[in-house]
Length: 167
Image (tube, rainbow, N blue to C red; front, side, top):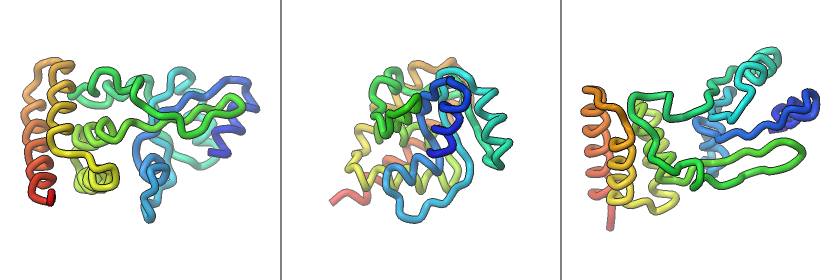
């Protein structure tokens, strides 16, 4: 976070970053999620920030829209539901609402993503029905593509695991 603040101070360009990935997991309080990269949605200045971070040895996956990172769109309104983690001196860092973070992870669907999604669901008591509703909203906002079927299966398996773990 300090390096992002340095960038904002040095360039005079404010940074408004919606975190996703390992740094987000650390911000949510995961005790052992190690990462060295920055993944997130940046409202503007993607290229200069990526170059700045790269010059400091920090890999970055940045874009202006998390929805563009997958065939499956993010649920509409995800930016509005995000919470502010840090807001000072030209640097604003936001976190997705837990159910939106889960959808972001299910969109990619790697084993690590599914573990992250399960950890967030347990931490924030996100029930399968909330995930299903958010997934339906994401699907409704997506263009038709056969890749959506894989997402639907991933959501179904994930929700069944939540249901089976529920007391």
